[in-house]
Image (cartoon, rainbow, N blue to C red; front, side, top):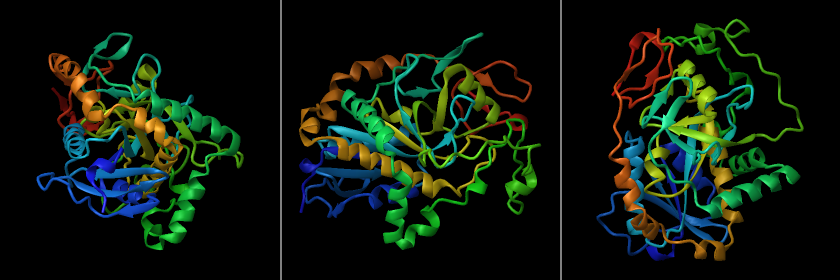
Length: 374
């Protein structure tokens, strides 16, 4: 039986499908460590990826968001003091554009660029006319060793392809019980609606019927060539806040002003408590047309990529990294600096023409509901 001191890689998931996908890609599973503190409330899975012992945690059911992620990660590092490498892996909403042809089932890896760390906390900042959203909070970058591995793996994939869809298919052929919920849906269900097409909730009518399924409502995209990888991996900025992004027009403003590739709800609370690489499989387009149909497959491709990252790390590379508990103690003053920034009171309505960002108390939706940020 293992002990908590033997685990050097921490992997955080938010919801069940992400937790299942992470466990499915372990090479071996371990029993619960004999010395895990009984007061630790987290639920964990334990195992091995390559030569590394990995501990996986999941957020409480119904407890997604930045604060919940921070709490789970903090407790994990206390119980597993030798964690040196960390990942946040799961699903997110894609932000496609002419520059980035992001589709359902693709992967977004949070990487630095344009002066950003790879994660943008978009409920913590200010707006400047003509310049869009300007973050005022401090967000840590992923550790250098992980960013180096991301680059090395990208080069390897240029030579050989990423093989991620094949890895998921092979896994599901072995674990047939997961195939229905975690296999890739029919590609005809990947519909990107124009930003002004809003889904009106009706449980009895499909989105294709209620919102349309032709060029009057859809963004028409060409089929990907057989030479292109499946899925495509995109590298860049992930936007994170406590609430879901469900407004295509606001999504597009973040794309225009900040070059955001993806939206999610945990990473901003995590990266300062748990310096990590954030990986997201795309399950929707961060608009009102949300569906769970692609969540299982998106979780699988993200987990497959995370496994490839971990396997590329040499044991001595991990050993050279500072323990995360030590990193956090050294960086406490940054966290205190963050708490002094003011937050804004902003209202979104259908008539707003400016680009306005604050802290949201509800999901970010378009038009008539006018959720308030404060």
